[in-house]
Length: 56
Image (tube, rainbow, N blue to C red; front, side, top):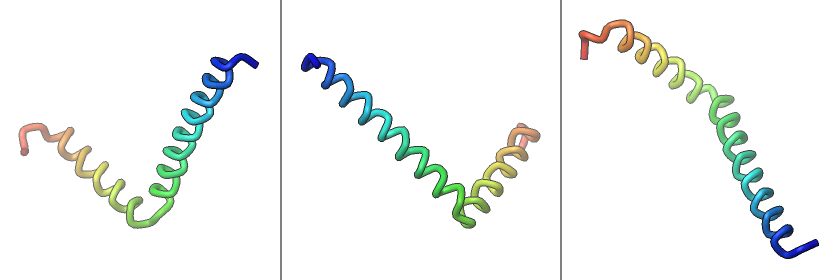
């Protein structure tokens, strides 16, 4: 295996690991009840803000 091949493989594996870490973090955040409430609350307020642009 050429050296640049192993380097590329290492880069790809670290990239995949960071993506996996982000997915795991997102899943753990969305699984916790507090953040779920925060997200639903935020999306509701965001929807209100979008539907009523005249109000600040």
